[in-house]
Amino acid sequence: MAEQLTGAEWLARSLAANGASHVFFIDALDRLIAEGRTGVMSGKGYFDWGDRSPEELFRARDRKLLALKQALRKIGPMEGT
Image (cartoon, rainbow, N blue to C red; front, top):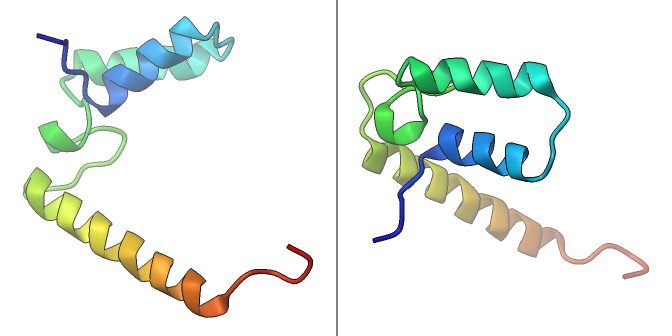
């Protein structure tokens, strides 16, 4: 079975694998991960989502993305594209 990484863990590994030179940022991610603040699935990451479930957060995100997609479709393509 593939290893399941949460947001903060995935970002930290991705940065390290790509030779990120932002040591401060990587150190901050390592601290968050050590504190169990690994992202939406844990209820906290860089942000604290309070008592909202991951499902509720994902639904809210998806509604906003769909609204953005509809707004962009309504605006149409930019001139010259």
